[in-house]
Image 1 (cartoon, rainbow, N blue to C red):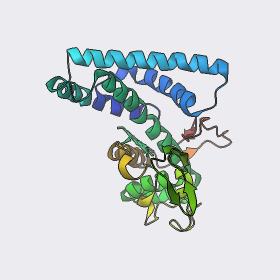
Image 2: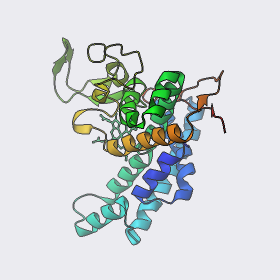
Image 3: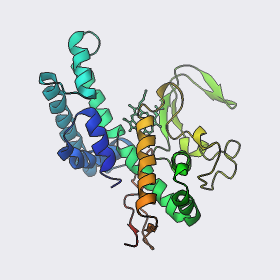
Image 4: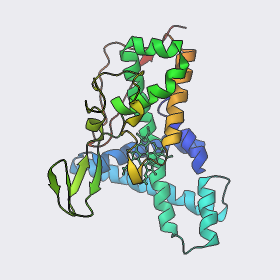
Length: 266
Ligand code: HEM
Protein backbone atom coordinates (compact mmCIF):
# COMPACT_ATOMS: atom_id res chain seq x y z
CA UNK A 1 0.00 0.00 0.00
CA UNK A 2 2.68 2.51 0.97
CA UNK A 3 4.59 1.57 -2.16
CA UNK A 4 1.88 2.08 -4.72
CA UNK A 5 -0.74 4.51 -3.40
CA UNK A 6 1.47 7.65 -3.37
CA UNK A 7 2.44 6.96 -6.99
CA UNK A 8 -1.16 6.48 -8.06
CA UNK A 9 -2.10 9.77 -6.36
CA UNK A 10 0.59 11.83 -8.08
CA UNK A 11 -0.15 10.14 -11.39
CA UNK A 12 -3.73 11.47 -11.32
CA UNK A 13 -2.37 14.95 -10.72
CA UNK A 14 0.34 14.69 -13.36
CA UNK A 15 -1.77 12.96 -15.96
CA UNK A 16 0.13 9.67 -16.25
CA UNK A 17 -1.59 6.30 -16.69
CA UNK A 18 -2.17 4.20 -13.52
CA UNK A 19 -0.83 1.04 -15.11
CA UNK A 20 2.67 2.58 -15.32
CA UNK A 21 2.88 3.39 -11.60
CA UNK A 22 4.79 0.26 -10.59
CA UNK A 23 7.23 0.59 -13.48
CA UNK A 24 7.92 4.21 -12.50
CA UNK A 25 8.45 3.12 -8.87
CA UNK A 26 11.06 0.63 -10.00
CA UNK A 27 12.82 3.14 -12.21
CA UNK A 28 12.64 5.70 -9.39
CA UNK A 29 14.44 3.38 -6.97
CA UNK A 30 17.30 3.05 -9.43
CA UNK A 31 17.40 6.82 -9.74
CA UNK A 32 17.74 7.32 -5.98
CA UNK A 33 20.74 5.01 -5.92
CA UNK A 34 22.45 6.36 -9.03
CA UNK A 35 22.09 9.98 -7.85
CA UNK A 36 22.59 9.65 -4.12
CA UNK A 37 24.02 6.18 -3.50
CA UNK A 38 27.42 4.66 -4.07
CA UNK A 39 26.96 2.04 -6.79
CA UNK A 40 29.91 0.13 -8.20
CA UNK A 41 30.97 0.84 -11.79
CA UNK A 42 29.11 -2.22 -13.04
CA UNK A 43 25.98 -1.29 -11.07
CA UNK A 44 26.09 2.23 -12.47
CA UNK A 45 25.80 0.90 -16.01
CA UNK A 46 22.62 -1.03 -15.17
CA UNK A 47 21.16 1.85 -13.14
CA UNK A 48 21.80 4.31 -15.96
CA UNK A 49 19.85 2.06 -18.32
CA UNK A 50 16.88 2.52 -15.98
CA UNK A 51 17.46 6.28 -15.97
CA UNK A 52 17.34 6.18 -19.77
CA UNK A 53 14.12 4.15 -19.70
CA UNK A 54 12.60 6.63 -17.27
CA UNK A 55 13.63 9.56 -19.45
CA UNK A 56 12.09 7.94 -22.56
CA UNK A 57 8.91 7.25 -20.61
CA UNK A 58 8.74 10.90 -19.51
CA UNK A 59 9.45 12.21 -22.98
CA UNK A 60 6.63 10.17 -24.46
CA UNK A 61 4.27 11.37 -21.72
CA UNK A 62 5.05 14.98 -22.55
CA UNK A 63 4.99 14.46 -26.32
CA UNK A 64 1.57 12.77 -26.09
CA UNK A 65 0.27 15.64 -23.96
CA UNK A 66 1.60 18.15 -26.50
CA UNK A 67 -0.64 16.50 -29.09
CA UNK A 68 -3.56 15.97 -26.73
CA UNK A 69 -3.37 17.91 -23.44
CA UNK A 70 -5.52 16.47 -20.64
CA UNK A 71 -7.25 18.07 -17.67
CA UNK A 72 -4.29 17.78 -15.30
CA UNK A 73 -1.01 19.46 -14.33
CA UNK A 74 0.84 18.37 -17.47
CA UNK A 75 -2.09 19.47 -19.66
CA UNK A 76 -2.04 22.88 -17.96
CA UNK A 77 1.71 23.20 -18.51
CA UNK A 78 1.29 22.33 -22.19
CA UNK A 79 -1.46 24.95 -22.58
CA UNK A 80 0.74 27.57 -20.90
CA UNK A 81 3.61 26.63 -23.22
CA UNK A 82 1.45 26.84 -26.34
CA UNK A 83 0.07 30.23 -25.32
CA UNK A 84 3.59 31.63 -25.16
CA UNK A 85 6.51 29.30 -26.05
CA UNK A 86 9.00 31.93 -24.87
CA UNK A 87 8.10 31.17 -21.22
CA UNK A 88 9.98 27.87 -21.13
CA UNK A 89 11.25 25.17 -23.47
CA UNK A 90 9.86 21.70 -24.09
CA UNK A 91 13.09 20.35 -22.64
CA UNK A 92 12.26 22.21 -19.42
CA UNK A 93 8.91 20.44 -19.38
CA UNK A 94 10.60 17.05 -19.82
CA UNK A 95 12.80 17.86 -16.83
CA UNK A 96 9.97 19.07 -14.60
CA UNK A 97 8.01 15.91 -15.30
CA UNK A 98 11.12 13.77 -14.80
CA UNK A 99 11.57 15.35 -11.35
CA UNK A 100 7.93 15.19 -10.33
CA UNK A 101 7.63 11.51 -11.15
CA UNK A 102 10.27 10.90 -8.51
CA UNK A 103 9.80 13.67 -5.90
CA UNK A 104 6.06 13.15 -5.95
CA UNK A 105 5.96 9.63 -4.50
CA UNK A 106 9.27 8.01 -3.45
CA UNK A 107 9.53 10.54 -0.62
CA UNK A 108 5.97 9.92 0.57
CA UNK A 109 6.35 6.15 0.35
CA UNK A 110 9.49 6.24 2.47
CA UNK A 111 8.23 8.76 5.03
CA UNK A 112 4.99 6.79 5.47
CA UNK A 113 6.89 3.54 5.95
CA UNK A 114 9.33 5.09 8.43
CA UNK A 115 6.37 6.66 10.21
CA UNK A 116 4.34 3.49 10.46
CA UNK A 117 7.39 1.71 11.80
CA UNK A 118 7.83 4.41 14.48
CA UNK A 119 4.12 4.37 15.37
CA UNK A 120 4.00 0.59 15.73
CA UNK A 121 7.32 0.36 17.56
CA UNK A 122 5.79 2.30 20.44
CA UNK A 123 2.38 0.76 21.02
CA UNK A 124 1.26 3.68 23.21
CA UNK A 125 1.53 6.06 20.25
CA UNK A 126 -0.46 3.77 17.99
CA UNK A 127 -3.17 3.23 20.60
CA UNK A 128 -3.43 6.98 21.23
CA UNK A 129 -4.03 7.49 17.51
CA UNK A 130 -6.63 4.70 17.38
CA UNK A 131 -8.49 6.32 20.29
CA UNK A 132 -8.25 9.84 18.89
CA UNK A 133 -7.88 10.02 15.08
CA UNK A 134 -7.62 13.81 15.27
CA UNK A 135 -4.01 13.21 16.35
CA UNK A 136 -3.14 12.04 12.82
CA UNK A 137 -2.14 15.48 11.50
CA UNK A 138 0.32 16.08 14.33
CA UNK A 139 1.55 12.49 14.05
CA UNK A 140 2.50 13.27 10.43
CA UNK A 141 4.55 16.27 11.57
CA UNK A 142 6.26 14.17 14.22
CA UNK A 143 7.08 11.53 11.61
CA UNK A 144 8.56 14.21 9.34
CA UNK A 145 10.64 15.35 12.30
CA UNK A 146 11.67 12.04 13.80
CA UNK A 147 12.27 9.89 10.73
CA UNK A 148 11.88 11.93 7.56
CA UNK A 149 12.65 10.47 4.17
CA UNK A 150 15.07 13.23 3.07
CA UNK A 151 17.56 13.54 5.89
CA UNK A 152 20.27 15.47 3.99
CA UNK A 153 20.12 17.88 1.07
CA UNK A 154 22.60 19.96 -0.85
CA UNK A 155 23.35 23.58 -1.47
CA UNK A 156 26.06 25.64 -3.16
CA UNK A 157 26.91 28.89 -1.36
CA UNK A 158 26.17 31.83 -3.66
CA UNK A 159 28.37 34.19 -1.62
CA UNK A 160 30.85 34.19 1.26
CA UNK A 161 29.00 33.83 4.53
CA UNK A 162 29.31 32.56 8.08
CA UNK A 163 27.04 30.18 9.95
CA UNK A 164 27.43 29.65 13.70
CA UNK A 165 31.04 30.88 13.53
CA UNK A 166 32.05 28.75 10.55
CA UNK A 167 33.21 30.53 7.40
CA UNK A 168 31.53 29.33 4.24
CA UNK A 169 33.19 30.55 1.02
CA UNK A 170 31.28 31.35 -2.14
CA UNK A 171 30.91 28.20 -4.25
CA UNK A 172 31.27 25.83 -1.29
CA UNK A 173 29.29 22.63 -1.53
CA UNK A 174 27.18 22.21 1.57
CA UNK A 175 25.36 19.18 2.88
CA UNK A 176 22.38 20.25 4.99
CA UNK A 177 21.78 17.78 7.80
CA UNK A 178 18.00 18.06 7.98
CA UNK A 179 17.70 14.90 10.06
CA UNK A 180 20.12 16.29 12.64
CA UNK A 181 18.31 19.64 12.82
CA UNK A 182 15.11 17.71 13.37
CA UNK A 183 16.53 16.31 16.59
CA UNK A 184 18.16 19.50 17.84
CA UNK A 185 17.48 19.50 21.59
CA UNK A 186 17.25 23.28 21.71
CA UNK A 187 14.31 23.20 19.37
CA UNK A 188 12.88 19.77 20.23
CA UNK A 189 13.43 18.70 23.86
CA UNK A 190 13.87 14.88 24.08
CA UNK A 191 14.41 15.00 20.34
CA UNK A 192 15.34 11.33 20.21
CA UNK A 193 11.87 10.42 21.47
CA UNK A 194 8.99 9.89 19.07
CA UNK A 195 5.95 11.67 20.50
CA UNK A 196 2.86 12.36 18.41
CA UNK A 197 1.65 14.85 21.05
CA UNK A 198 4.75 17.08 20.61
CA UNK A 199 3.43 20.62 20.42
CA UNK A 200 6.03 22.10 18.06
CA UNK A 201 6.46 19.06 15.75
CA UNK A 202 5.38 21.22 12.82
CA UNK A 203 8.64 23.15 13.04
CA UNK A 204 10.42 20.13 11.54
CA UNK A 205 12.74 20.45 8.54
CA UNK A 206 11.45 17.31 6.84
CA UNK A 207 9.98 19.25 3.93
CA UNK A 208 12.80 21.80 3.76
CA UNK A 209 12.63 25.48 4.64
CA UNK A 210 12.66 28.77 2.74
CA UNK A 211 12.63 29.43 -0.98
CA UNK A 212 12.77 25.77 -1.97
CA UNK A 213 10.28 24.48 0.57
CA UNK A 214 8.66 21.32 -0.77
CA UNK A 215 6.17 22.09 -3.49
CA UNK A 216 4.23 18.90 -2.72
CA UNK A 217 4.02 19.48 1.05
CA UNK A 218 0.21 19.75 1.23
CA UNK A 219 -0.21 16.60 -0.86
CA UNK A 220 2.39 14.63 1.11
CA UNK A 221 0.88 15.71 4.43
CA UNK A 222 -2.61 14.80 3.29
CA UNK A 223 -1.58 11.39 1.97
CA UNK A 224 0.30 10.53 5.13
CA UNK A 225 -2.57 11.71 7.31
CA UNK A 226 -5.14 9.65 5.37
CA UNK A 227 -2.90 6.57 5.51
CA UNK A 228 -2.68 6.88 9.31
CA UNK A 229 -6.39 7.63 9.72
CA UNK A 230 -7.50 4.72 7.59
CA UNK A 231 -5.07 2.15 8.96
CA UNK A 232 -5.84 3.05 12.59
CA UNK A 233 -9.59 3.01 11.92
CA UNK A 234 -9.69 -0.21 9.94
CA UNK A 235 -6.84 -2.19 11.49
CA UNK A 236 -6.36 -1.10 15.11
CA UNK A 237 -4.70 -4.46 15.89
CA UNK A 238 -1.96 -3.71 13.32
CA UNK A 239 1.50 -4.64 14.61
CA UNK A 240 5.00 -5.15 13.29
CA UNK A 241 6.02 -8.70 12.43
CA UNK A 242 8.67 -9.52 15.00
CA UNK A 243 12.29 -10.21 14.09
CA UNK A 244 12.31 -8.19 10.88
CA UNK A 245 15.65 -7.34 9.39
CA UNK A 246 15.47 -3.55 8.87
CA UNK A 247 17.23 -2.65 5.66
CA UNK A 248 17.36 0.94 4.42
CA UNK A 249 17.81 2.22 0.88
CA UNK A 250 21.55 2.76 0.45
CA UNK A 251 21.78 6.48 -0.27
CA UNK A 252 23.18 9.62 1.33
CA UNK A 253 19.98 11.66 1.09
CA UNK A 254 16.98 9.36 1.26
CA UNK A 255 15.99 7.29 4.24
CA UNK A 256 13.39 4.59 4.02
CA UNK A 257 12.93 1.01 5.09
CA UNK A 258 13.02 -1.28 2.10
CA UNK A 259 10.35 -3.57 3.51
CA UNK A 260 7.83 -3.20 6.30
CA UNK A 261 5.98 -6.36 7.34
CA UNK A 262 2.87 -6.02 9.48
CA UNK A 263 0.14 -8.33 10.71
CA UNK A 264 -3.31 -7.84 12.21
CA UNK A 265 -6.25 -9.80 13.65
CA UNK A 266 -9.14 -10.45 11.31
C1 HEM B 1 6.88 13.08 2.67
C2 HEM B 1 7.09 13.41 1.41
C3 HEM B 1 8.05 14.46 0.98
C4 HEM B 1 9.23 14.87 1.55
C5 HEM B 1 9.89 14.35 2.83
C6 HEM B 1 9.77 15.94 0.71
C7 HEM B 1 10.90 16.66 1.01
C8 HEM B 1 11.34 17.76 0.30
C9 HEM B 1 12.44 18.61 0.69
C10 HEM B 1 13.30 18.43 1.92
C11 HEM B 1 12.55 19.58 -0.25
C12 HEM B 1 13.49 20.77 -0.22
C13 HEM B 1 14.68 20.64 -1.14
C14 HEM B 1 15.54 21.88 -1.03
O1 HEM B 1 15.56 22.55 -0.01
O2 HEM B 1 16.23 22.17 -2.01
C15 HEM B 1 11.54 19.32 -1.27
C16 HEM B 1 11.38 20.05 -2.43
C17 HEM B 1 10.50 19.70 -3.43
N1 HEM B 1 9.50 18.75 -3.37
FE1 HEM B 1 9.14 17.51 -1.82
N2 HEM B 1 8.93 16.11 -0.36
C18 HEM B 1 7.87 15.25 -0.24
C19 HEM B 1 6.81 15.12 -1.12
C20 HEM B 1 6.68 15.75 -2.33
C21 HEM B 1 5.60 15.60 -3.27
C22 HEM B 1 4.36 14.71 -3.03
C23 HEM B 1 5.89 16.37 -4.36
C24 HEM B 1 5.14 16.58 -5.64
C25 HEM B 1 3.83 16.67 -5.69
C26 HEM B 1 7.15 17.04 -4.08
C27 HEM B 1 7.78 17.92 -4.93
C28 HEM B 1 8.85 18.72 -4.58
C29 HEM B 1 9.45 19.70 -5.47
C30 HEM B 1 9.04 19.97 -6.92
C31 HEM B 1 10.47 20.32 -4.75
C32 HEM B 1 11.42 21.41 -5.24
C33 HEM B 1 10.92 22.76 -4.78
C34 HEM B 1 11.88 23.87 -5.17
O3 HEM B 1 13.08 23.63 -5.39
O4 HEM B 1 11.42 25.02 -5.24
N3 HEM B 1 7.61 16.65 -2.85
N4 HEM B 1 10.79 18.22 -0.90
